[in-house]
Length: 267
Image (tube, rainbow, N blue to C red; front, side, top):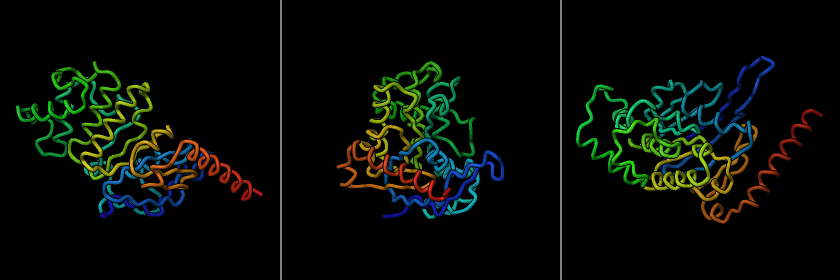
């Protein structure tokens, strides 16, 4: 199995040398095989979103190396690294241009990185392609290509953002609590759409979630982060048999042990 992502000894400290210094990632290591669909859980400040931002190149890391499909992207700027990645954020408003139509948003995603840029006309083939993809979402959007994105609900916008992030198969899909701002029913629908898109296209995916049940029910692998490191990693049959109660126990134990270690260091 080919390696899709490799993080080696990633270190990241924000505001070093100041009163607000925060050492968020502490020697983080992670390897994803091609097609891995990994859910990520952890408490506030565990380093989950920082890990995704480090992968995306939002900021430089202090130490370590990042490889995507064997290519060292550690020093690659964010705009160049974007060609490898699809991203969906927590806020449904972030991933789309509210004043543009559905088809204009999808066209931007489809032709991203092409030299013709924004001036490329949307032709019949594009529209047929968009309608086909939108129909799969089962949200009755395939006949609303001319509707402005800003008129849609949060769930509809998040579904379109997911489609835009995967319309050109990315090497890695990053989902940062992409259902957290949605009501439970809509969140479940978007998660089911996520499963369908990820599994159909065999996308290597990292999905942060605050919901333990969702972390268990989705993906083939689950990792728990604490203190800027991975403290629990489960996959396959073991993950399939995982319960919320067991995961809560692992979570509580990890955080108690972390507190104990901090006290021992302070002592």
